Image 1: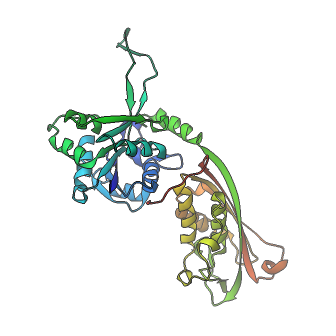
Image 2: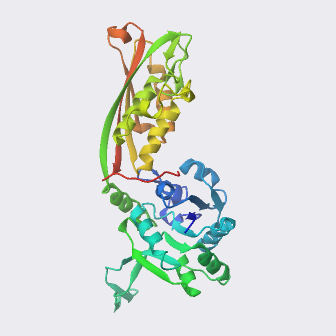
Image 3: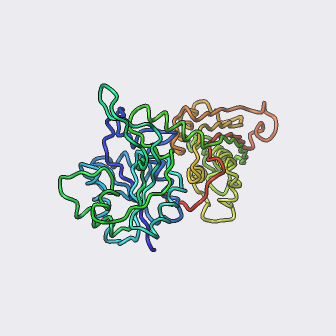
Length: 389
């Protein structure tokens, strides 16, 4: 089968969870809820393209949450939004489509594998978990027990042959709602296969679900810390960039890029947490394309590698070592810039400065050194796959 596209339906208002913004854009485990499923689906090797369906007027929230990503404006109901997403990609005639709810942020790649494999034998496949709790009817008093044999909790993403699910949406009666896409396919004779779901896919609907989801995700991550260190020479006629901020000084740092020693040390620390080598491995000074390059892109590349593995940056600590210039007046600006580059809160960034009491090359004003430490959480056992995000 050829092209596979993933649709994330994220057009709801999310009012039941409270807050000032729709829940799909609210923070969850270190980043916006939507960003988790965007990252997982975007890096899965079997998915060729990702499209997010959002509500009218949510474009700025989407850009802030995940950056530039293809999107479609949804409708008044989930069914309307899914239909609009399907129609938007109809001209591309994909063979397969996955339809996922943004309110299920922690998507195990193994579930995607099972769904796509099931499409070899049926036009639809859904993840589901057997009902374990006792079920009973009743309002104020306990009524009859409902047998739970053969009952399943249905989850997303749901996977389909594209032509089959688009046809089901187009034939669905106007004004009649459907709780999911699979029942629409079944209405018109399409078989839907059940595959093993995952508790990580439980839906986030109410405020208490936030803490439960974060606890489930935390259990799958392990903390790692790594350090970085860098040195650059001070020379007349060069600009002085430190922590992504241009600082007035009679000398600047010399190097192949902008020689931002602070960001270089921090980049190496982040790369160290994933065992991805050092900054020279990814941006060799022998490559002319990095001549004069802004070091912020190096830092964001390291952060991107962590995100591609399903990791979360918890905290970064940076110490700048020099006699001059004084770092104190620029500390807040450096902190804000690094937080911006890494999409962190300022409280997750520590900036310190010290001298060597006029000893060594930094003490003689010949250069500036920086050392950094980064703490991240990564999935236990690591992650793999290509990255579309």
